[in-house]
Image (cartoon, rainbow, N blue to C red; front, side):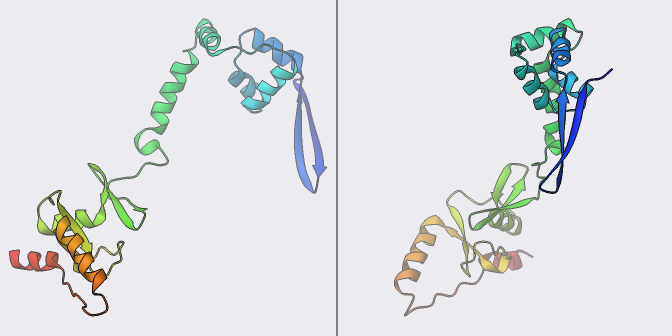
Length: 195
């Protein structure tokens, strides 16, 4: 049984394969209940090639409702149900190519975020909470001593209230030429006093 012709040509030193399908046969199979996906597998072409062949031969395409009814009539689940099952199974959890395990890191502006069981959080807050062995309060912020917001070494972090942090930067910015404020990490000191 001949389904069509394969034409091979060379254009700009590239081998091009062009498939010429028998449009009347494709339309006949489609009208008799075969889906475009089934026809694509049968002719070993893409779904889009089948659609283009059907359109060029003035074959009326089925709408979503008709596709579902056709699938049920031919003993298959409706396409939308089948598609939902496939997508659910394939793309959820670790099957999703964008899945990130707990402990994964990513950048957000100047900050590094780390994935925890509660979602994405700033890495410096997670490190400070581990070292202090308590949750940080909502009014507490982490100051980076050297100004590099992606440097989250414990010796570079200083926990302070939001108002103290704002005051620190006002004083630091106004008097930078006259006064150099030196901070030591209060997280390391806290850790050493506990143990």
